[in-house]
Image 1: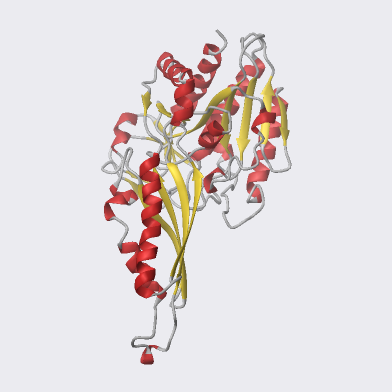
Image 2: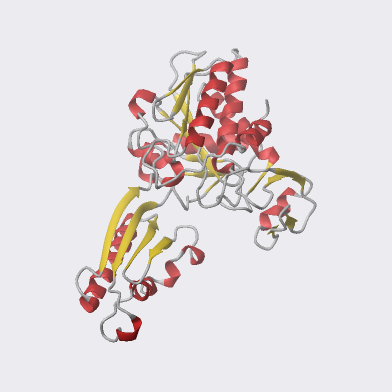
Length: 401
């Protein structure tokens, strides 16, 4: 089965994660897909298992002794930001200009100039009503296809090749219950990036912030000098965060504050933020500034009017990867030998590999080939699925020399 065929199958599983669920996986759809992956790996001839928390791990036993244990990891969940139910992928041949999806939604050339590179090529797109799920079912499909090729061709020299598929990466819990020591890999790669050729080992330092605003509700007819409208107060807080530090105004290594959920009313309001920066000092400054705004406004509107709770999520793995830079050098070599131009880019997000790196498993991130993740305009060039399968096999070859 080709990587494209696998991908078109996997995206039909509904696997959005749910941050409001305390279970692992957070949704039953993930469990279903993960079990299917375990069964598929076993049928190939890999030694596969699924633990009580849904994690799937597998070993393709070595055909050559004395080699390090190399791993490849992807996540099975999709973002809850946009529906992943009843995904109906469409295959088109790009003939230039804007792409009009089945729903009428457009992927415009103006917003997506990279489309020009794929003139005459097959693109897999959504029907405009859901996300596609290339993040990260493209990575899953690429790893699975490489695994099948290894299992069918016993003459390919390699050490133990380890595979893992995780749940709940999109809600920051992808490695919470992953047993790195038992997994046993020496190093590896997550296949969870974007455009073909990207190599990523500098990710954000990340924190989540919950802001509670405590107001005082009084009938508006008698509210003068008495009402504290939590909605108005929240707006004052949000306006004090620098506008140039919002995602829409930042790129590359620039960090940001982002409010991604607001709920409540006059009496009480809760807002959820994410705080990001590649540089640790600037990251700490951003968190401290968030808290200082609360202190300032509490001085004006009363103690505990603004109550922040800030929790670190993950850190920049660059300091770990720089000590294991063969991973980057060999990724560049593998891509070059597969006819792909490699480029190192900062990750404007996170990946399971960031946390794994700090837990003793150095794990930079490689491209899947997809674009516009977490949205209805998501797409992936079909050939990228095959190319990344080639890259995985080339890396196995390089580490078997």
